[in-house]
Image 1 (cartoon, rainbow, N blue to C red):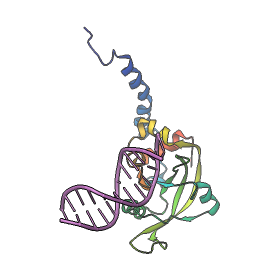
Image 2 (image 1 turned 60 degrees about the vertical axis):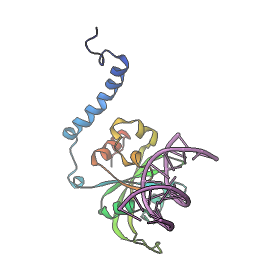
Image 3 (image 1 turned 90 degrees about the vertical axis):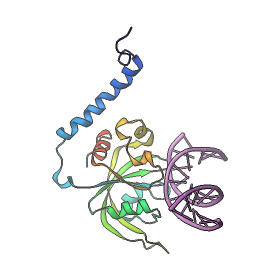
Image 4 (image 1 turned 90 degrees about the horizontal axis):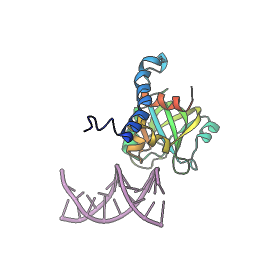
Length: 178
DNA sequence: GCCAACGTTGGC
DNA sequence: GCCAACGTTGGC
C-alpha cells in the first residue's frame, strides 16, 4: 500500500514542482524588491483598446489622449477612482490580445464631452513606455500568478484595477523597467 | 461565425 | 423587485 498517493503521483509532482519557483518568487519579492517611495501609494490599472481604433502607438504619437467613450458604470467608476500619476497597463484587444505598454494618468476625471446624455467621465493619459516584450492574453491565462486579473474574470470590462503586485510582476516578466 | 459573459431594458 | 429578452463585447 502506498503511503502518500499525491506525492507518489508523477503528474501531480510535475505540475506542483513547476509552479513552485514562481510562487516562491512572488512570496520573496515583497522582501527583495525595494519600492520606489514615489510609487508606493500609487494605484494601478489596466485599460483596453482595439488597436484598430486607438493603439498604444497612437498614444505615443499624440502625446496625450482623452479616454472618452466609456459607457459602462463599472468602468466609469474605475476612471473616477484614478489619481494623477497613477499608472495603467495598455491592453490591445481583438487582433492583438496583448498588454503592450504603460501609460500614466495626466488629468483626473472630468465630464465626457462626447456624451450626449447620461453621467459619464473621462481622464487624460500620457504614454510612459512600451513593454520590452508584449504580454499576450494566452501567456496571462497560462500564468498561475495572474489568475486574479479582472481581464480573465471579466473579459468585457474595459477599465479595471490591477494590484501593485500584479503590475510589478508584469513589468518583471516582460523585462520592462520604467 | 459562434458563443459566453455581462449589462440594460421593459413587462409584469 | 424579479426576470426574460435583447444588445454588446470580446475570445475562440
